[in-house]
Image (cartoon, rainbow, N blue to C red):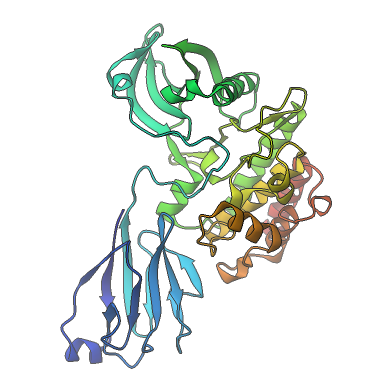
Length: 406
């Protein structure tokens, strides 16, 4: 990840009294302070800014700007902020100075910490990049997860039919639970028939590695889209959430709980907001024996319902309602719930999230109170205070969208 600040505007005092750089590279290993005095990493001799005005530092995979109790405040794209994740082309305004944030994202970065899977050493399987998987010719790798690789392939039995194939990482075969979970995901998705759920066509095995084929959607995950474009407007965010709520309601009718819904498990098709929910690798099938290891944390902490933190086996559809509320929070703010917590310590993170509410959305974005109510209700720590079903949340979202339309 390469990031920099481009100086777009400075006041006359700074321009005349110092030699200014036109571009400042941001070192991910350092905390960058910006202010009026030379002791700062970047300084501007301007009375319009404070001695230590703001700072920029890395938080996980992203840069975050924080106001340091400055007199005139720190603004991003015209909105006053306390702390905010930065996106490509964001305009930071401090006093009379404007700085344009630029970055080039690492294609393998991920905003989420998935703690459920046994961590497998990742390596690109070069063999598959020039090989066939049964009658599928591999064209390119398009994604990866903790246990699987995803490739775009051509079906040689039907020329010019391009689909995707997800295949278990070679080391996954050495862990019985992971292999079984992967196969269950494929079977669960193959049984699904919903326009907002990725469609699986076939299950197979290649060199002792299970795989399944699925429709190929040219697009980006919500995580990637927002990292490149910034938060979504509330209407768009609500429409996407409504689509996913409808998909979850269908999934719950099939006696399946997702348990790992998050922005990186939702795909937006390029040039449209056509939405697909993916990845049932951690799903709980009500009528089957749960293969979760006892007391194992299943899910992604910042999007995980409190009861799921306690016991991943003892959850119902309201756990997915919470995760959808957290995902809507992210789409509206561009920041994961509890992003202020920088710790990677699992126990500390879970304790913090379990006992505290997320930072109010109003700290990041202005949205109608009706939309804020949807998020707060869905993310209630008490599951009895959430929407009872995903279908109830779906109806609430569309009632709100219709009401705000007029």
